[in-house]
Image (cartoon, rainbow, N blue to C red; front, side, top):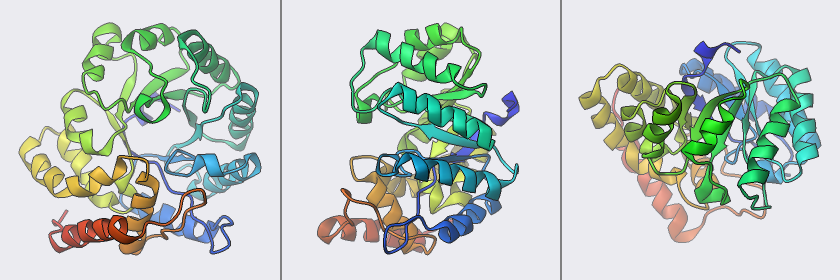
Length: 299
């Protein structure tokens, strides 16, 4: 993958299930075309929104093969590596490279709260298991392991690390990283309801969540922000914000999959231990979507 690919809107797509909770490849094929038709710049599979933790290794490989075949080189395909065992993470990276993915989004070790030395060692070891470029994913809010600007400066010596998905929810991190390493990394916004702020500080890409239901609005907002059309972008962003807020919190997967169902591009079905939203939680999402659709701007 060349550097020119490391920008733009990369949906972290949901994994769709049949009523028996097996993989629904027909639904995922249809949804993929919905995203590509809207002009997204890449696709990320097996992320947190893709319910990575509920998928076994065989399913992860099967999904990687499926999306590689369906995309057929039209946009870059990144697979998320989010494992608790280094050997398994390296195995998945090596297998995915053979399948033909274009790169990885790499999280620190899952379950075990690794210290700084262990975290950096893990990232280096997984990167060494393939020849592909890596987007480092920093999400201390959800996973408890934090990569500082100084850590990214250390990792900058490894040419395989080319991008950062910054999800600390602290927008100070972007200028801190740039101050230490300049434009060494492509920095992606990883928190939907901080996109405007992140692009104002120099982000070049967006690993997006609500894009799975509203791709045209997401792509248009990205285009406005990168073109410096800040007033028009602010107006679209403020319409979008109630939806983007649904990307935050422990039930963001249920929130977003319910939004997909409500706008007719997916199912709210999730694998346990997650359960479908009910009562007040479901009603709040429904009200947000109804208001958004009533006031939906033309893009």
